[in-house]
Length: 333
Ligand SMILES: [Zn+2]
Image 1 (cartoon, rainbow, N blue to C red):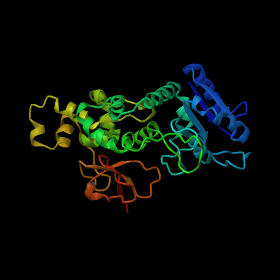
Image 2 (image 1 turned 180 degrees about the vertical axis):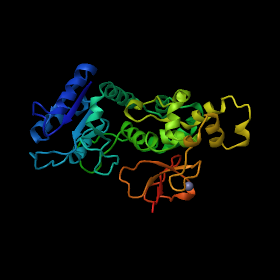
Image 3 (image 1 turned 45 degrees about the vertical axis):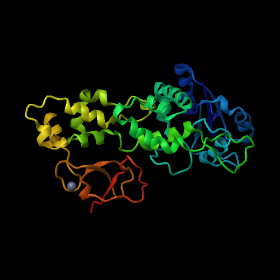
Image 4 (image 1 turned 60 degrees about the vertical axis):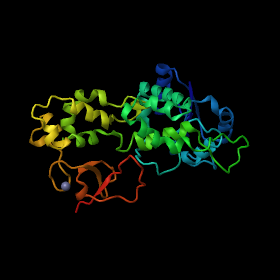
């Protein structure tokens, strides 16, 4: 396995990123080519682009040597026009949770490279993704519960029904095509492994159970079997399957039949021995059992907080996607 890294400081001996790449080479046996964004160096690599398992481009070039490429995102389309199946990441020292600074498959920080074993698995998972030709191949790699396979099939239908994109050999600039593996990877990173849907974040899991994240953390072992273990699970924060959280909770000893008399949240929070401060409460009104997650208006961190639907607003700026919930907007006055 070999990766290509484009960085304007590639020739600097003490560049910290080079140290990270050396460690990956040693520990994960992943070779790398480390080049500057200048035409003569790019040319040779672009001709052999399919030799690489992954391309990583520095987001911000500090020293502008090339008049053509001033930032990493301008290089994306150059590479994408030559390969429709090799994933392309942008790397930066800064954090960006959004995909709004350009076109690319994933935005990573240097910390992503520092976790060698997770990085090694990431590359292997891309290889598995390349071998998927049907939605059932792909669903198998998600290790999803059986009862949501049909829903997953529906979610994936638009991706698999796209005309089979093939790389344009003539290198024309008319259309930049993306292979099915790239489309699937983007769907994973932008929908399944990011939004609240069939899989939920820790905040979403706690919300379901009517408790705080802190209290959920004290019961993590109970939900081990509901944890997402499929493709790229090492590259993202922990997530849990909604349907498996429900199965687990409903299997608990419930001598007072709480699940038949109370809501799922109320019964679960009691069975999880929640004390006064352990119940989830609405960020706006302070009452128990909020039913949504939302971001606070004007908060650039985009952190999700529990909130009642009635205490928050719908965000019409985000495109609605079936099976997934967009964060609500919390107007704090
Ligand atoms: Zn409320």
